[in-house]
Image 1 (cartoon, rainbow, N blue to C red):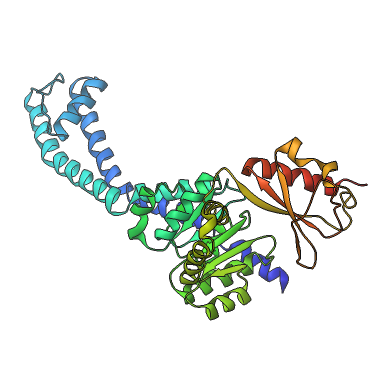
Image 2 (tube, rainbow, N blue to C red; image 1 turned 180 degrees about the vertical axis):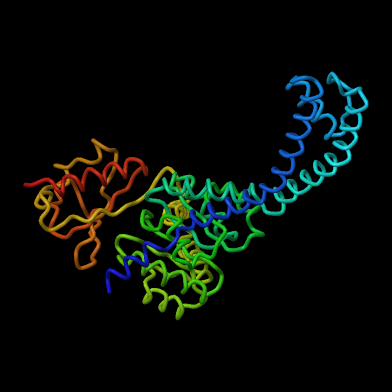
Length: 370
């Protein structure tokens, strides 16, 4: 049974394969008009070569200017004879019709079949295959534009998926480099977006049912919630709870989030700058400062050491502002003599680049044998 499933998966075509097939289908439509043009040019060239005793270049030139209705005159030796003019007459009558018909067909195929669009989509899928650690954003709207702007500030790569062809121009105008115009709930589309290499996903399709379809498919492909994060929008708190049960790491109710943010300003009017700063940090709007959490495993060699022994402030310009204990308590009364205990989570404060270095440093230390 497993062998059959594996064979079935091998037979499943990737989205890029489907686009390649589409390109070849469009290219195959060029065969007839190109064959017609080739035949007329070949017949005309050989005819004039016979009249001129083998003058290939001038014979080809004479054929082109005759079929293309340019008509610079009789430039081939023998074309000004009775036989030559009869040949030119029939070549012009038949060739001009073939030429205009072929050009019309080629132009129609080029534009109506959207060859450029298919080629651009194929190339984009090739570029998406190179992405790693990116985010997939399902649904394009004003929220997506703001979100992608914040992701670009942090240099976090992303791919936008939307099924509506009419929003493609708006996506380009928003400066979004990677996007796929297909249904985001399809496995083949999520696979093309690099879901197996992605860090996480944001689902914002404006409809709870469509959001659920995408979340279920994505979670089936990436079941580990700690390895692949899914964030979604929901219309009500009840729907948000259902989405989290289905596999979303966090479901957000927009009006509730907005009310909470406004309340934060109301509650902290006397400390507007600090509350606004932490608010911007929490919502990813502050590019120069950030907060991150680094859990310390129970068997880590860092356990039992003092914060001053690690000395993150001096070496990496990062400050430990608090420690979250295993039971959820937050210890903010820390100093250099504070000892790291099993299961602690260090809360770090600093520049985003320095925080990444600190996270890497602490993880490497945690993996180093004592």
